[in-house]
Image (cartoon, rainbow, N blue to C red; front, side, top):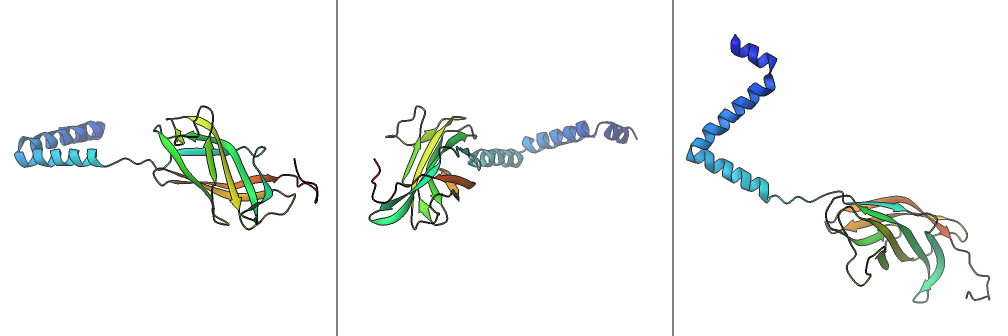
Amino acid sequence: MGAMDEFVHSPVQVVAALVTIGLGLSAAFKEGRQFWTNFWAWLRAKPVVPTETLRIVQDVQQSHWGLGSSAGTPSMQVVFNGHVTDISGRLNKVLRVDIPKPPTPAMMLLLHHNHDARRPQALQPFENTGIDVMFFVQPVVAEKGKPWKATLIFTDQYGNQHKLRNCVFRSLPTPPEGNPAG
């Protein structure tokens, strides 16, 4: 009855002791040592790929859209402005940004605050910096003078897609017909 009382009063310690004894006995024999050596190598060989690496926040006051043209075809120039933070604690890159509807890849992606635009756009571990993204959306899907909402998908070097839903882009004023801007 003594062993049962011991288990009832401190089950964690009893289980830990039994596991330790079992591991010690298995390691005493060649097959047991080989099993634990292989198990440890398997654990260490698995690559650890983070699934969450970025947090993105839009600056709605600085994000906008305006009418333009691309190769003579009417389009919307859409500019996203915000902040991006690396939350994984590793060096991370923002490889691309897309608008899913209508399917539109970014024409320009720029991180700022001490980032050199001529180099890959990488974030240091836990870094927070500004981000600007520009798109040319065709066809024109927004109404003149009204804000436009869209989802943006930011993709990192691991292939993780970070969706930022309901981004609001305010409409820039359109110059009157016949009165060129500038």
